[in-house]
Every structure is written in structure tokens, then in C-alpha cells.
Image (cartoon, rainbow, N blue to C red; front, side, top):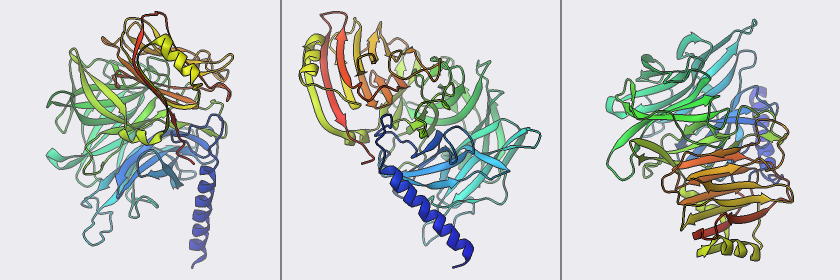
Length: 511
């Protein structure tokens, strides 16, 4: 074996051994047990999410050299169920001295339209990544354009296309391409953004290599902040045969809770331009503080028609300062998407994927038709506590305030509840918060006409709350002490009743 190939083999094996060791030690006080986190160093946006040949792939913005943003490369992991992830070596590293690898997407080129695949018998497919190459010259002037890389070994190794860049607008803020196949016109469509101008750019291609610009959209009422990580996809409307297009824009800053957030609009797409619904307005996918840079899985299994996405559990107000230190950044639970009618508007409903039931280790409590006071007595009697829990709570009466306190300790607590028809999460006393004045707060959803239920996933340092079966969602990080593990249920009114309350202890995907 030539010396160069031998060295590459040693590096590859060392990376695999390191990843395996890291997976066996995922038991730190704030380390999520069923959300994806890197073994070490900094992670932000999910990238290149795709299903291919029996595997879900998660690529992600990653700094291999430190625990703050920098040296952006694509980390990589694979899974059979979107929950149990296996770490793989860095997939697409920064090109030292030339450019970093910013966000982007991956498609399955089924028929080798790109000519980059190496057909094997009847299989003509390969994976093609489309990403932003972010460069900065000696004077500090930035330039961003779009590159291709391709893989013929199920995403394990990647080669950059010799004709890069494939799209260049000579702009410093042109980034985050999301590519999908538009079947009605047999073409690939790319959406990307001019971040600082708050504009969406739409392109098309027949071969993934040669792109033509079709239209532009924006700024859609936004006058400040940046647009990042766009997506454009079609969804069914619940309870009807209708389907509508959804344009997703991740906004930094300007979200309802402050800092970063995920905005969306509903409308139509004719293969060339997006036209928003008159009633779409400004809608948000998550009303917590920590949900951003969403990305949807492409090429789901043929027998699976779900649209599923993941978001980064983080906020640029404090992402580089969170107190985990060894590692920073987590990804949300995978969520299935649909549209739900609410008056003259369509809301983006999100529910945890059905695979999450595999996380349930033990049913700790199941009560129905009792008062909140009685339900809480049963919680205390059973001595229920924990830092990895799933809780389903539905209300028999909905006019009063209800509170579910998690990670309760002598001086710490995180409160999830409903008040005035709005769900909320209060982390003003949740634990460590001195690292940022922007961290403490109480965050609420818009008002629901019929507040019926809360579905909560607690995972050590994260809380995801699905209100009214995903009508609204709240995602937040918390940093409590390890000994703060209590659970409590309460209501301001003695007449407030529980329709049903179920609590499960959830198991770790890393053991």
C-alpha cells in the first residue's frame, strides 16, 4: 500500500476508535440522552439530511478543533430510526486557507443526472451534496458561493466536483442551499438566500451542475436581521384533500422569544416562483428560545410519506457560551410536519415521530379523571422524579392555569404550563444562567381557542413541549443541578381536572 494511502487508513481507523470511545461515555450531567450531540466540540445547524439505502444521515455544522464556532466542516452520523445515531468521521472538512463548509443539503441522484455516480448493475444512484463554500480574503472581504461534492460509497467518503462553484452571485452573504426534485417539470430546484438582504433566490437545473436563476422572493415584511437555512416543500392540510406549499426562513435575530427562530409562510409554488397566501402573515414554527436552522430529510423511504425535520437546539445570543464546555450544541427530536386549519390561516403542526415510543423504558404513572391535586398526590406517593421523562397531560377542564414543574430542587425549577389559553415554559429559575443575560425568561405560544393537552420531552438539559398535539411548540435549553429531579403538578383552581396523565422514564440511546 502506498505511504499516502496507509496514512489515510490510520487516520480513518483512529477516528472510528475515537468516536466509539466517545459514544460509551455519554453520561455527563447536562448531556442529553436521546437527543443527538457531538462527542466533543461545537455543533450547530443540521445539514444534508437524507435517507439512502437503509440509513438516515445527519450531517451537521461542526468545529473539529474547538468548542466555539469556527473551522466549519460537516460532521456525520447515521441511524436506522432517527434516534439511535452512530458517529462517523468528519465528512466534508474545511479547505484550510481557502474556505469553510457552511450549511447545505444532500439529494439522492437516482438516475445519475449529474454524471457523477458510478453505476453498479441496475443501481445508477449516488449522493450529491450542495453546500456553501465561505471564503474570506486577506483583507477580510467575504465571498460565498455554492459547491457540489459527491459520494459513491453511501456517504462515507466525498469528492468535490472539479467544476465548482456551480452557482456564484459574487455576494458575501449568498448561502444555505436546499435542493429538491420538482417532479411536475422534471428538474432540480434550489432555494438559497441573500442573508443580509433578506431575499430568497430560486434556481433550477437538469443535472445539478448547471443552474439558472428563476425568481426572487422577499423580504416579506422583514426589515432587520438575516435570513438563513431556507426550505420549500409541499404538505397535506389535515382533514382535507388539499395540499399547500410551505416556505421556511430561519431568522437571526427577530424571533418571538428573542434572538434566532424559524419563520414560515404558506402559499403556492409553480416550479418557478413562490406566491404567499394573503392570510399567511408572520408565523413561527417554535415559540421557545432554542429552535433554529431546521432541515428536512430528503428521499424518505418509498413506503413512508412523512415529512420530517430536525432543528438545532440553540440560539446565537449565547451559543458560544453555554456551560457544557466539552461539547456544545444539540439537535431536536425529529418531528413530523403537517398543516392544520386555524380560522383563515394554516398552522405548521409538528409532532414527535412515532419512533420515539421506542425510548420508553418504564411507565411510571397512568391516571385519569382526577383533580390536579389528586394527580399530584399520586406523583408524590410514587416518588416520581427524573431528568429523562416523557409526559402526556390532557385536561378535562381548560379555563384555569395549570403548571407542571420539572427538574425541581431546593432553589431550582423549570415550569411548563398553560395560562389564558397559551402554553408557556418558565426557565427563570431553571439553574445555571449567568453565562448570558439573554438566557432566563418565560416564553409563551399564541393563544389557542381550545387548550387541550401538553406533550413534554425532558432530556437533562432540554425541554420540548408540544401543545395541543403540535399546534404550537416550545423548545428550550436548561442547565439545572444534577440533584434537581423533582416533578410536581399544580393548578390555581381546585376544580381543574386531569383527563389523563401518563409519565414514562425514557432510556438512553447511547448505552
